[in-house]
Image (cartoon, rainbow over all chains, first blue to last red; front, side, top):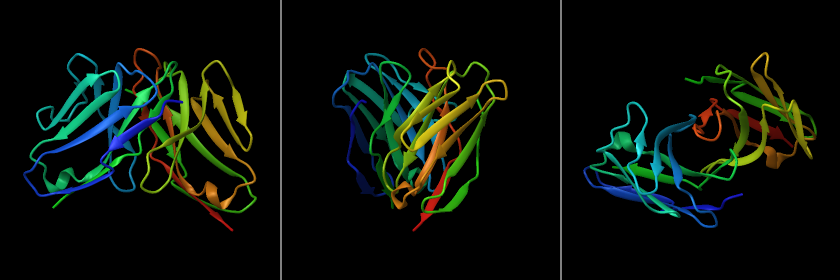
Length: 114
Length: 113
């Protein structure tokens, strides 16, 4: 399946700062990538669909101005959490859809906002 | 939209025994049902999947069954090993063109040595 990396794996930041998370598809060109958020002991919730060369599609309740997504190339999507607050602390995971219906997930990024 | 329910939320089994996790879905248009294993601090790993044109699929100790009429699908792990301990998520999607995954709430499986 597709190999997906994320960087950084962990980040701690102060409240009010912005944090950028990168998602890379290492062996598969992806016109679409997905961003999920997972709170402790909970399931994954889809935040947005990242589209190469066009605007991202956000799920209901997700603030597009707070979670900026840039899909700059077929192998890279970035999620920027702007003006982060403690309630944004979570595990952020990206996924890449493969040839059929499969989705392959990155290792995740643990964000802690102090 | 799709609603996926998963049971049980926690499951403990003795090493060597079988484990069964069940999920139901609501959208009859869903046609692809993957299962993911997530270890602590890591991303979900696809372990097996099934499409709506198949009733059962097996891969070594892991099998998945699908009942389209009843809208439920199950994960079966036989001869469990301690390394099977993890959180397992089922998911459903309509597939290409609308391939947003809808996840179940997860099952924490503990295999007791």
